[in-house]
Amino acid sequence: MARSVAVIGSTGKAGCQHVAAFLAQGWHVLPVNKGDKIPLDAVDAVSVCTPDGLHAEMVLAALAAEKHVFCEKPLCLTRMEIDSIVDAYNATPAGVILTCNFPLRSVPEFKALRVPLSKGWFGRQVYIELEYLKDMGDRLSTGWRAETYGYSPMLAGGIHMVDLVCWMVGGYPGAKHYIAPSTKTTECVGMTFSEQLHVRVTTCLERGTVSMHSIKVFGSKHDYFSFQHQQPGIGALIPNFVGAIEGREPLIVQAEEAINATAVCLKDDEILPPGTHTARH
View (tube, rainbow, N blue to C red):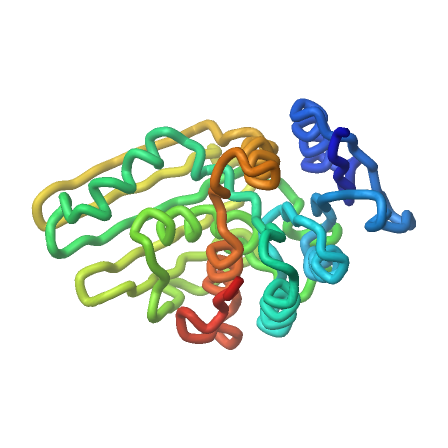
């Protein structure tokens, strides 16, 4: 019997791609949109594609019903919401999956970069620069993004690069600071992972920006540069989510990783030390 998923926000850009990806996996899709009741009793999983300010509410409802959750980034927008999600996830039975959509992990070149970073190939001292560049037009100054408390360019796009670098180096920063004043479309954050590893993540979502994801690694032994102009499809990680539920493959983005990447991207006054937001499942 085919499994079922409720796709919340199924008519939006992300929702349409989620629907197509789940159907391609042979799953039955129940579309849920504004004003609809989530059919939690009738599904195995929930896919969250709502405006970002509603993510936490949807994730918490799904976890309370002990359903698997695939959520668009970010999981939530405040520290209080993170704490609630951690508590809710830890209260679910073993085997319930919570994950966030970070499709840049599926880019072959980025996957390959993990090995030399983890093996120390670049040398003892390493500085990494990452850029998330995308033309978002007026979408940050109008509509729900402009009306959502706590929203920022980092949560809108830069979180992809934050997750990517944390995944590559296998850890989370112990300190974070803003290199330049943030605007509605631009944010530049410096992060310290150790005395030997420093990172800068720049997000620019200005109108006219050429969409690109770049990584530059400067090491005491070797350097590396990568410029990616194409982002994987929004539904790129859904086959892995389905495979993990069905027991065929390990989950690519673990709950702990999704929670901690979100925590790193919150505003300074809502950051806790690394490891505070850890899902212990």
